[in-house]
Length: 222
Image 1 (tube, rainbow, N blue to C red):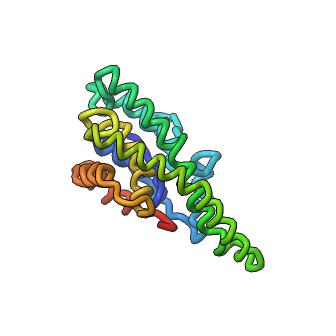
Image 2 (tube, rainbow, N blue to C red):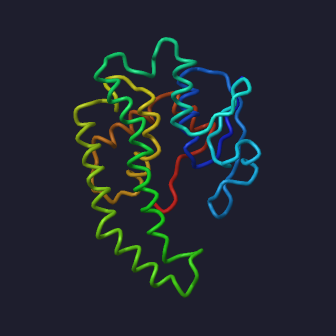
């Protein structure tokens, strides 16, 4: 039996979706974020980093959502339903698996941090300066970077139904967190191809089951 340690509003939703797509039996242990939006200390008893997702499988304790998705595909997807067959699509598959956390998520995290510099827990005396600084960095650099990435994703999905070809794969599962966050912010203007991709995801029975198990995928600060 696989055991998923699931934190609400987290990358753990990726693993839930993958488990449902592969029709695997699993147990889910739920954790709720603290009022600070940090993970509870109880997760450190499962993995030293205290983060989610964490997947337990036959004595193995696995962390990092991308690594978990690759593990599930390699060990529980014998027909390669969630990995493309063609060499060209596999190049895209590998790219998007790494791009999600390596390129897009750091920008979205910076966006969240800089947008909060004028609010708690920033000390009262620094909030005015923090707000000005945060807005300045966003306008001068960060928003332009996000616009570039949004355009890049739109151009790709204009020519592909899914991120790695004509069939849904682990690349799409990995991309849900940053892609949904990008759409939730709504600051990049219309992204019709990404929005259609999101609608295709939300129509999938396995996605709906994963949401029922893990809760809605909302984003703070959006």
